Length: 353
Image (cartoon, rainbow, N blue to C red):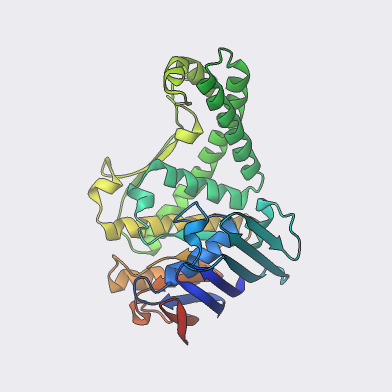
C-alpha cells in the first residue's frame, strides 16, 4: 500500500505531495489538470516506464532539469519501504531503501500496480499486445519466476531476429532454445487462463452484467504443430521479413459474444464492464495464491458508465482491493464515498477530503 507520494517536475506538476489511505482514493480535476499524471508517477516508480511515453525527456516539466518521484510504501507484513526515482534527460537512477543496486523484480514486489486506462475497453477490442501484457502481468503476480522466463525468451528472440537480419544460415540453436522457452510460456498462459476465465464469469454475475462471453487463446502459431516445427516451417518467411513470425510473442486471447468478437457487438460501456471483470478476476487469483495485492490505478473510472454500473464497479473495487487510486472529472462522479478525496487544478493540489 502506498502511504505517501511525492512528485517533482513531472509534466504539469511542479511539486506535489499526497497522503493516501486504504480503500478508494479519488483524484478529481478537469482534463489536463494533472490527475492522470499522479497515476503515471506511481506507474513509473513500479514499472520504470510510462504508460504514455517510453522516452524520458517528454515526461520532464518544461523548464525543469529533471524529475523526482518518491513513494513511502507499506508491505503486507507492515514493513516500510522508500522507493525513489530521479530522471534527467540523460539518465535514470532508482533507489530502494537507500540501495541503488535494485532488481526490477524487487520493485514489482514492493509496489505492485494494476493499471486500467481511461479506455479500459481496449483490453477487449484493442490490439493483441495489450491482452498479452495483461496475461503476463497477472502471471508474474502469482508466479514470480515467470518474469525471468519472459526475459530469457525475449533475449533469445532478439538474437534470432538479429541473425535473420545478418542473413545467417544456421538457426538450429536459436530455434531449439526459442521452442523450449516459448512452449513453457504457452503452457503457463493456458493454465492461468483456465483459472482466470471461470472467475471472470463469476464477476460478470456479481456486477450484474448480462453477457455470455466465450474465450479463445491463440498461441501464436498453428495449432496442428509444435513451436519448433512451426519455426522451421516459417523459416523462409522469416528470412524475407527479417523477424520471427510465430511464437508466444504473437499470441492473442480473444473474447467473443454470440460467435462474434466482443469488440464488434458490445457497446463501449459493456466492454468496459467486461474488462473490469477481467481485472477483478486477476486480483482474485493473486489473493488466492497468497501474492502481494496490486494497487489499482484506474483512470477516469466513471466514463462510459451509467450511475448504476459506476456504483456496482466502485463497490466491487472496494471489496477486492486493499488500495485503489482512481480519477474522475468531478468528485460526485463516483456514487460511493471514497476513503480520501483530492482535487487538482493545473498540477496543484487545491483540496483534500
